[in-house]
Length: 331
Length: 73
Image (cartoon, rainbow over all chains, first blue to last red; front, side, top):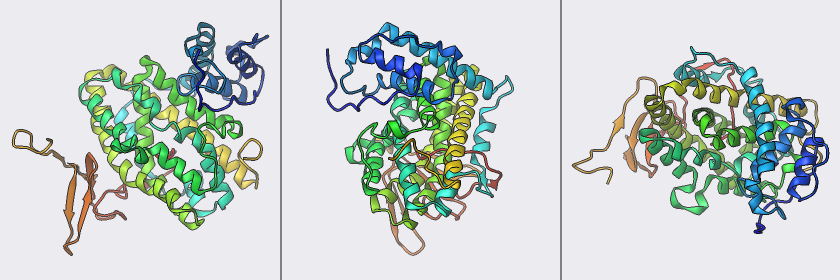
């Protein structure tokens, strides 16, 4: 069996469910795992268990056989955990037959006058350098996978939506230049801030709210039935990115971060102003032209992403305003 | 080739948004300064509010209540 050389180490468990997953990944008996349906869906234990199971589809973990990606027991467990997460999201973000994808996208375009609930406003106006570093470390779980789960949707799209999705992904993956891959620009930013750039390095520090944002894109990316939700997720990210990136670039300049840190965000101001337009007109527009019955799922993807981003924002701002760290333990 | 007699370069105009032109694009400013973008698609600012003019930076957007945000993409 193949053992990936550069895969990250397994994380520490956070409860009975993640302990059971960890045991299965290490080839030992899982013990008495609780039924996922009885677990708190947004808590540390379930989110970490799900994160570990999804990671098998990306780069895996050090010492874990690559073949376990398609292990029937692990897939069964993942399905049960995923269902618990998805059911909760469907409850928390109800979308009915009147849902309008264009309206949902327009709502995202409105910039807040009062940015008190916004992480990027806080970073721009108030954050200290150590809080910026913490933000960059915790977000790395997401950004070092940037655009990866979105590539899974490509064979599920057709025509205009597929061509446009690939064009934006091409940009995300550096337009043919390895040094310009957005995940690489993020690693450069981390190095500038004196952080460890290793893939998955900060997993043990990342609270459930961070893991949930990553799990959401893995969930949408892996399930063909949720392809429209994945497109909604992509649209959310591209539409909200430019103005937020400009504020974060300002925060990094103010804090005296290096040029790579500032470049990551200024590149996104301009790139995502374009991506937003392409995703709206051609990815969402093209998908709904060929599969109009998927409009509710596009809206679900947009709103579920906003819902989990809001939860993460509340966690970060709650900790920082109380003078605490938002990470689990020291970075 | 994107830009050829058989396949003219496409531009998309919008009332409340940038002019979208298939890249690469060279823009000549009033002062004669040339700016180049080699993106596959270029969003040209038409509201003149962009801080990265001639490129769009989404400054044309309305400002209102908070509606959530993520990170860069």
